[in-house]
Length: 172
Image (tube, rainbow, N blue to C red; front, side, top):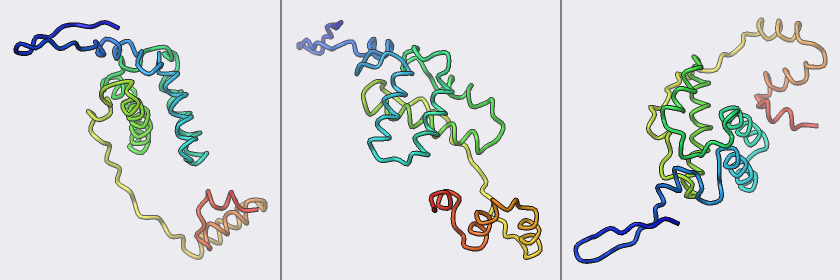
């Protein structure tokens, strides 16, 4: 480990050159973003996050890291994240990307792999959420008439019982 001397008054203080290690991404045994993604996915599973969230998080993070898995995590800046997000015109998509990437970098900060989350320097995406639409009886009837028979129970439970799609999928 590199060290340097810094004179403060009459005292000498030895400081580890952790900035160099951070830039090289060598803190905590994480050499690159790919290994950090594996660590964050495992940590989320261990924290009892839903399987759907863990799968989604892994998908997003691996897509972001594709082709640069060995790149040190500390080399990613807010400019990298912003350049990635600018590809998407939908505010919902950009908000999701920012949330997923922020989860990765926040994990890395907590573990001491990097000193700051580059997502914290970006403006949060504002999404105007529209109120849910309520189907009229005629629209409901039309939907059920056009719905394949195999899907009808799913649609009925969602429309009339107010059960969320994730909850419907867990029913036997």
